Length: 443
Image 1 (cartoon, one colour):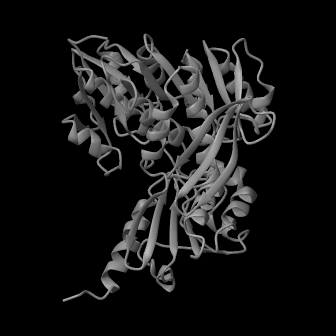
Image 2 (cartoon, one colour):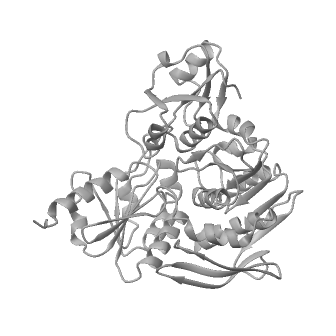
Image 3 (cartoon, helix red, strand yellow):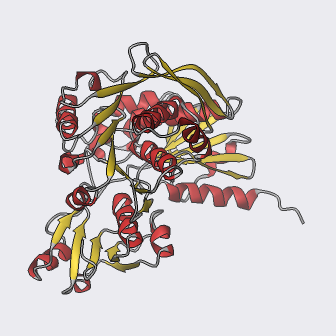
């Protein structure tokens, strides 16, 4: 780390990149970066920190900078080419983060799903009991110079997490995703086992995942879940419209009764992983209980607001397993309301590879609407459409257009869940505006 350089982020609005920029800024380093002009949910934190954000332009690069390039951008990106031509020291995001976590008790959170929710929960809990730096995939980042812990997301895409050497790892699940890179589930598992082999002290893994049960590593693996053969186990689970409570055991040792104000079975599992880390780091479990109960969630994960007579939920879910978890949470909190799903498919390769699974998970809603597929930097066209997915959905499947969200006006006193990893929020905003305009005003 160099106090005399300016750390320049190519793609600073990316969820991991913005969090990393905030970590460095908190630690007293000079930070700036570039990105698209379009507003993203991650940029508010950067603006509040006073970090300058420029439009992409090779002229932004100059002597005295150290470049951190987002993984979404190829080596041919004009700013990255300019950095190389100027001889600037250049890192990829995961390369830089791998160096940054050294010197702390680091916990990497890996998994096809649940990384952000789990790392956000872990960061919140540990921050309440000890100085903690963290990097969460909703764009949240904190850099404490005196930190004991460093919590970060370990992303499996293109095996980027192979760079990391954390003290502990949490592994929430192994599932087939990123079909543009991985050839199948065994390829994904091979990547996870490779990452697991770099963990120094111990791994906390979801015990009901058949692939995680096959891990062969040199450090202890502690399985968490709800079954008899799990090491860290939740029993006596009670789910209500206020959240969930459950007893926790480490093998035969009773650790206590815990409560969370979060919804869905997956949040109970995430809590078990956090409790496991805390237990092995000898943290007072009564303090953990308090911190667990006060956590309200991370950005774009079951984020709620009331507009007119409707509950609107915004969620990042973009894989069938995530959709299922989000709809499960909505059912728990709103058992007497109709659940309407509005889903924006994310990337053509994922939509095509998981078409039947998407249909099955979306059919858990009472009514389903789709938007057009959101492409990516890597792919802007494909051999599948939202209409292909809609044809497989039995609970609807109509395609919504941004200039006509009126089909949603048929619902009253219900819940609409907007899901997707692209720009589905623009549809959400259009619907909210429509609702606001037709709602009678009190004079």
